[in-house]
Image (cartoon, rainbow, N blue to C red; front, side, top):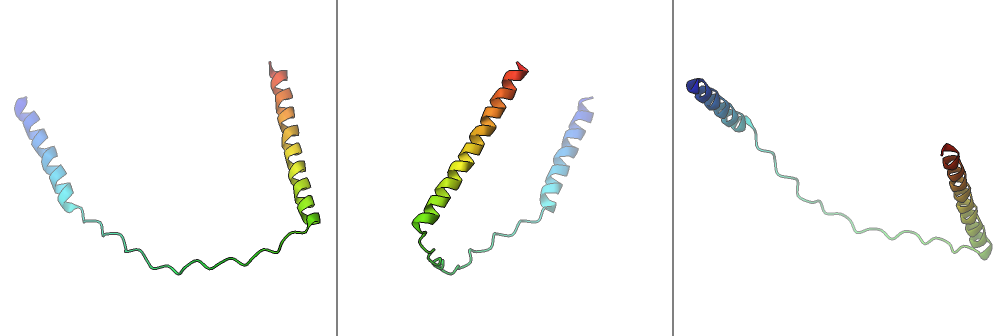
Length: 81
């Protein structure tokens, strides 16, 4: 019984070494490429006061919509209890 165990151990050890020898080494990663310096983005035109107000109102409406969704979820969770 111990001979069979020894043979199995030797066989698995040999197959592991053979598998390690069959592996081809992975090539090294390519050297980093030189990149061009980032181009400055074109300047955005300044928003007028009216445009800023529209953006603020839009953000307010979006937050109100999210709050309504939260209220609805809270009501639904109460109904489940």
